[in-house]
Image (cartoon, rainbow, N blue to C red; front, top):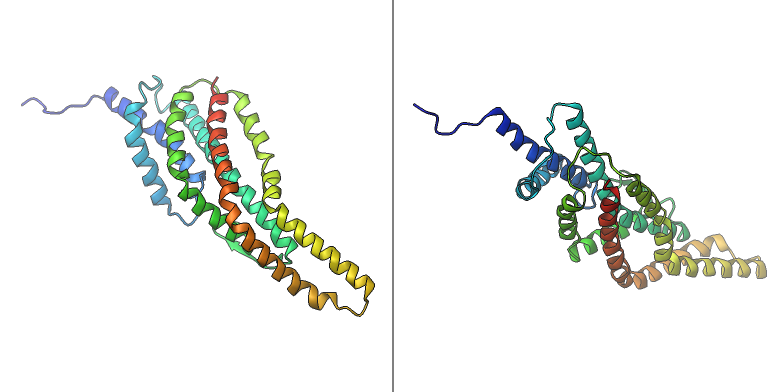
Length: 264
């Protein structure tokens, strides 16, 4: 009786390649991108998200390179996809790194440098102000459909930077390094109004302490600085959305530009 459904080894290899290489890029992005790549997201969920995206997008990617998976060329393509996906995730991480930097600046000026604890989102010790701003930034990211735009940018990356065994261009990595230099500048811009106000307050208390030595700056300074910082934070919160929305768009544009520059 003839077989109803038969698959040759060549066809099986073609199907495996069509799914595996896009899956590797997507998994690298999901593991490093904001929201998806947080440590509190189970690894099984990350793998499942990448697998679903690969199943949906793989049929639209066209012909894959005729390179066996178990070969030096196949391993090189896998390494390339890991690097590309991770670099795309880091492009969006820079937006949130700027928010964390702003939270660190604000926390130091408010005298809350001791109020730090382990943050599972960043994987290190983070000030409470930085964690608060980071959580708000994630909510804003979801509110402006940043996660959907990130998936759309991932799909477009296979057009601008298709899967191939050619080496990646160095221009993309240089662009990524130069973009990383904007983290501290963006964080300082976000925290500048509050930092300026608190520095002015500290300067005024210092002058008052010189004019009146009996004034106990240590007893009054910390509560006053903390109260002023909380009041300024309340004024800063409504401006966080308008500040972050164009930067999220800029992060997505940087992601697309980086993939274009990586193309040999």
